[in-house]
Length: 314
Ligand code: GLU
Image (cartoon, rainbow, N blue to C red; front, side):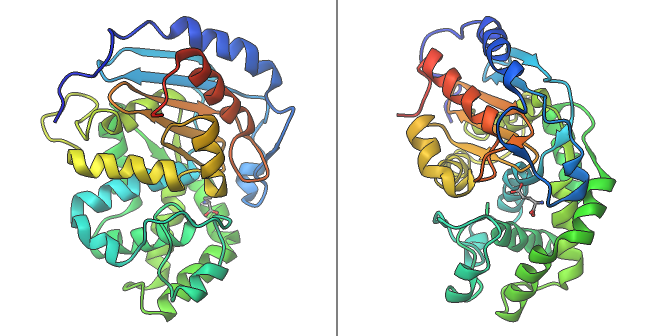
């Protein structure tokens, strides 16, 4: 494992994040739409923008609405995948693939032609398959909250109202889970699997906490708070980054790689986590989404960050 990051000493990123927030925050809510298919998310004020980063050395910078908690939604798939890799390692890949889907995140079509094996762990079907593996290991969304609390160094909670709202209206996710079960690709009852999935999506975090919690991804799996036990092995962390780059931003992964060039994971709550390997983790949030489900302003913020710093994996 590399213990020191490459490149020159870490610059002070605070002025840059202030500049990005000053330029973009006034535009928050002007383009895109807040996710409305989960009723509890539809009420979120779109005119918000936050950004935060944490370097591998532990330096932090943050601006805008960086302390406002939001529903992390699909960003949680990063952390459930991480927990699953900790518990069962390579065996996970018998139940989920590693290819971009090129389809909407909640699509049923591909699942039928591919006999219930989801393309990757970041589409809904794949995350439900991961949730099934976690249930088999006796894990719950509460365990994910505990893992995140440890990684972020502060208590992380589940928004039970959002979880209940999604459980009551998540007909398509019920369909996906039952469909996979019909192919023998889900071992447990569908109900506890979906309970874990809906509650993990309802985890509430702010930008600062997300940038901290994802820190193991820029430090080859090492614990972001300096804990002795690595979160993932170096090989696993690199593979999670590869999956983020190819599959982390719905069917816009190609555009993200082209415009931003960083491993990213987004969620319909408007959050996006990005990794600059060996340097830093960055988190942006603005609730209004573009047609693909990615935060419209979050994407602009990442473009601006990369343009100003030259930090990209390419
Ligand atoms: N809980 C959401 C769903 O399953 C997550 C979607 C997302 O953030 O991509 O529809």
